[in-house]
Image (cartoon, rainbow, N blue to C red; front, side):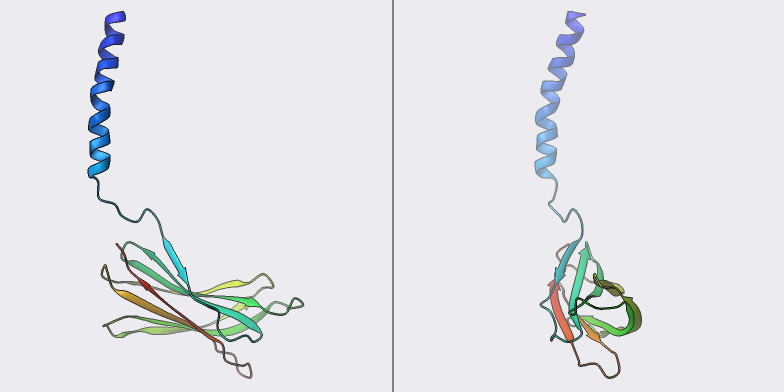
Length: 144
């Protein structure tokens, strides 16, 4: 029994440096999604922010809208989410109407792919008749 324990301990000791070498040799890459949100758009009824979420070469463009008035009552609001991969044709914009709650709401979503190293831009705008314009933009690099 003692001999078996000694053999197992020796095997574990030998295996440890191999595991460390394999871990050190593995290429570093993004573990999960990276989210980049820009500065808010012009103040109005809503505070708007454009965001880009990147996982590998998968890209999601979306917006965030939060009421500026603490007495806000949930209501449907129109928005436009648009973007492009720099050097490529623009991505078709998405026009949507979303129920915005008092705590804020994530809006839209355009899914696309982009080559590693490419710069992606996104814009998010209130598209509600009679409301002041509020457009927010952001750019991010796709670091695969």
